[in-house]
Length: 93
Image (cartoon, rainbow, N blue to C red):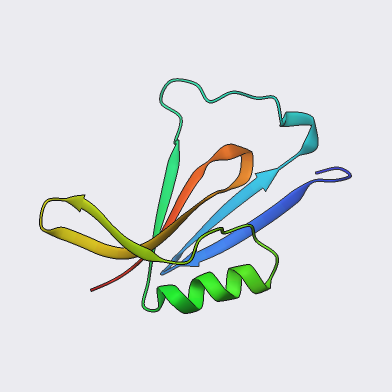
């Protein structure tokens, strides 16, 4: 991948999601049809936030209640991921 490149792998059930970032591609813009956000479920959103913060991720504010639709709220936190990708980690009810 080259000097300064970063790689992260998430395991979700039987699926591995691999995200790569390379300094030579930092000016790349999202195009039509490109994924612009990702969301993940967790059983303990407070623990997920703390673990990510402790490992150096810039996760910002702690989890709070987010209302996606009237009557549908969840505890979650959002942050900017690789290449400006919006990420959300939410707790299952």
